Length: 470
Image 1 (tube, rainbow, N blue to C red):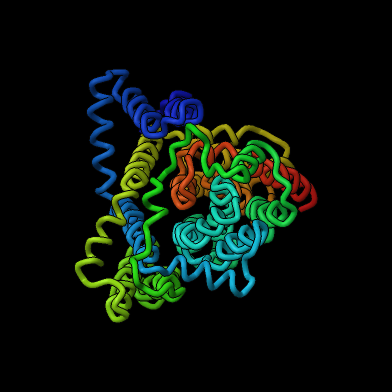
Image 2 (cartoon, rainbow, N blue to C red):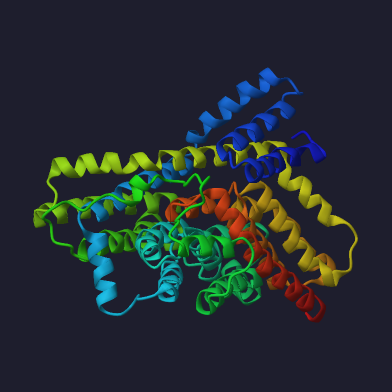
């Protein structure tokens, strides 16, 4: 592979800067992809445009990418089912009559708890928690930016602290590739040192309980309390149509009509992983599992509604199609995010940045440096898994060559990868969090940035301390 040096960093940096400055996320991604392939094509703009189109089309050559996009579209159908059947209204009434959620603090805690409980898959966690929580956040005037932050902060961080999922299986495979004899034990031993993931989760709880915000989130909360759900110039990831499908007239408002498809969705993920992995839940495909789960949830919901006389077969089919429509922009954004990830891979963005870590430095600061570099790579490329693949072959050899603690180094890579996945505007996790909260994507990125930076700063300090004493 040709070494493009510092030029390899330009496309993701251009994309991120333009997205934040202009709020034109689609255009920013397209320009970043175009710049990347123009560089690869020897600065020939015609080659750049042609290669960019080919790269976007080739996104669908990956079964995993295609499943992720289909899953996102079908989640719109699940959301539409729960609303049209009266399930969302029934669930809200059920929660309120039992005193589970009666104020802003309780709404926030419910979203946080749901995020922790659903640890099988990150995107399932975001979409289920968002579906349940958004009506309650709107009712008690908690900002959608706050909901997006809670969803984002309890997805990837939690999946690394409770790695009984595709994340754990992937990392175990990477560790085994580095000739670690007991990769499962190595991953588990790193969990107590995953300071960023723990800090991100705890900070959410502190902010929700105390009600004390800082940074741009203060303005978002004030605006929402005044009755304005979004900024005047906001472009929510999904239209209000996706969040306000009226329940069918004359049908009872039953919480079951929301709980049944959601529970089916969550339970089918580990079942699918077990079946696909031939009895080994860690060997199953995460993308297959979530797609099978959402299809099963739709079938179960449609059958249940037909038995109850809520929706007939024709209505269910129409609702499946119409429910997916509002999520087409999100599917498009995911496609472009996958494409720029492929562009960065071709340019060697991650390996170039990682080489900067190989300078002679005091051993005590190397875990903190590995964490920071992993943060930067994941933020620039929008992928935590790609960052894990780049940084593990660098971090693990340092353990024996320099005499560093293995668990601390693994945690530094994983924590840094999670930071980027959590914060990057081109990360699929951040995109789906904005979608689930029905908020402007860049507003979500801006409002959560100070909180993520706080957790990252605490993690750097702890890596420095433990790098010295271990």
